[in-house]
Length: 90
Image (cartoon, rainbow, N blue to C red; front, side):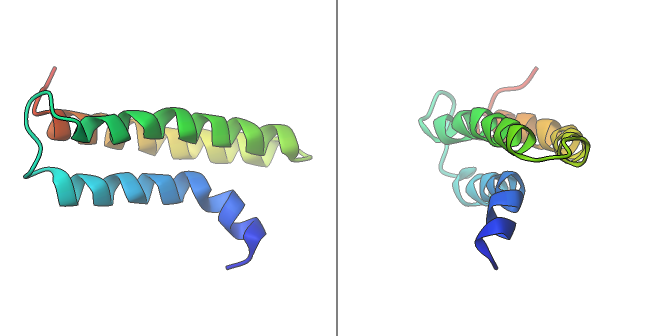
């Protein structure tokens, strides 16, 4: 993959990493364990990356659409992983 593609796909790659982290660590985690901290850190990284992509691109509409589509899918996945890793629920 070229560097430009990696930069463009980084939010999706972070989402895939989050899912892999959940699959690997869900059984080892417990209520209040440290395993949830990595999942908590992924959300700001994804948001900052999307903002950087929007700001650095011209025209911005495609990146705004990309961010909106990704975040609509990412937020439920992120909440699910948080709940499963922390063994907590709403």
